[in-house]
Length: 99
Image 1 (tube, one colour):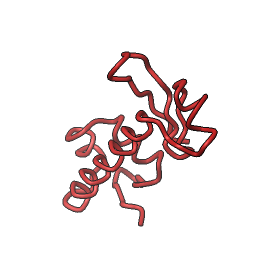
Image 2: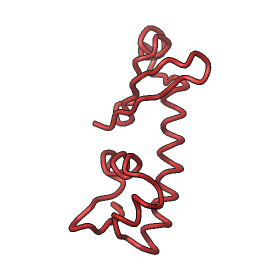
Image 3: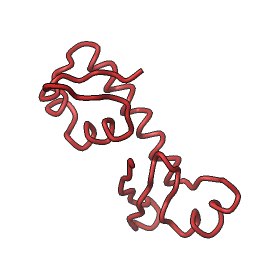
């Protein structure tokens, strides 16, 4: 499960977004959008973040697939998120793109 904490820009509250399940702990999602299969702005923002993270990670990994170098360039949280959603895997300190 790929859950992330998302800080709302409007209220500053922290909501838990599950990227795989496309669910959020915010009231808008729980009481309105979930009933009709919709997503809230927090889910949309996190999906956009994942897309951008994947683009940056893929271009980096194509050039150098060392996990330590990746963490130095970006951060460990981004590496963990990309591994959690199945975009990349790590084996013996090397990163590989999952196709």
